[in-house]
Image (cartoon, rainbow, N blue to C red; front, side):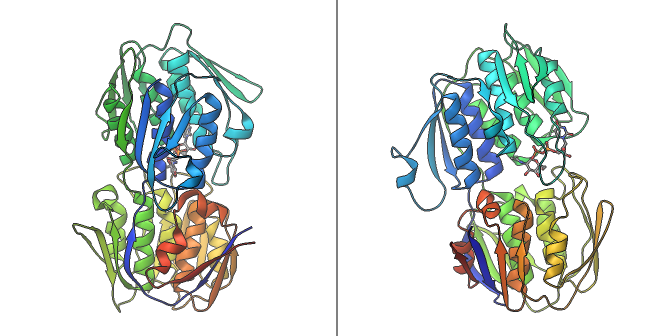
Length: 429
Ligand code: UD1
């Protein structure tokens, strides 16, 4: 299994191109199930999760091509992919596929809306918490679906099609908002979703659905209204830049010092997070090229953060920010409110010399003046990259095991960082 070796201590300087957002690309790809026409997506990142979803969609009958060629002939950064679900050949999403990537559960919305039925495996537990699907089920029922649980599968039916309805999410959920928004585009009548997620990826999907002929308004606020239409057409749509990748590299520069332009990044997609990085001592500005991050000399100031749904500080940057705080000049408290078990990186950061104590939903990080490299291992995507950030600043060599987590969500990580002066390489086995 591949590993990543880092020799820490170099400041980062130069430019890092920011890829298309994984969490926008996945629901956009799933939206291709809603039409028999071709959906063309620009700026799709080359990531293991994208490849996995291509396989899952293929199982339902979605054909794809990359700039007219098969995907294996392509190389480089984010690219354009055409998806065509001319005929849905199977409305079953089996456990073997759904268990590999939770977001593939989201096919339930489009399959049910277009075909009147779907049988989708429950995703099962995952490393960062139990992650139930109760809100998806309640919400689809509000649109008139009959839903049973059978042998670990969610069996959803709407023989006469879905009907518009009103649903108030008892808790903000990105995935359930994506799914209900997609399902409601083909329902008869009007749907109103209250307490909806406001993440930029929701807005990106709504824009795409509208380009396909849907009537969605209010995305980006907590109330989304969808007037159902009889069918959707193809469209061409661009995936937004990855705000989590942007925040991750901003934190890496804040950690090592230096001066980096995050090309193509949009500061407006992650204000809360960049604000926190700025309060830790980095300078951040939006330029024509992207977001510029610099930090010179001065120490890293401690900043307390609490994860929240957008527009608050994202849970997907919590581990990385903890990495940064391990070398602050004081004490920072980091509170995780979205997922109940998202502190697995704490033990691994401790192997590099970090001082962190856990108490319930909070981690208290006592800054240390230096970290020392060590072999480490990570159990999820964002935790892995927090170890990269810490490794870039640690003295000596850090080797990160289980790199496949990084490959799920970070495009060309080693290439991007080494172009900016980091000593980082992949050890393939
Ligand atoms: C998405 C993101 C993930 C991010 C998360 C929160 C993608 C592919 N993944 O995940 O990177 O960390 O948003 O910003 O976009 N919940 C329920 N019942 C449900 C659904 C969710 O209780 O039916 C809970 C979850 O357990 C969690 C909270 O709601 O505690 C938020 O989860 P949700 O926003 O749904 O996360 P995902 O969409 O899975």
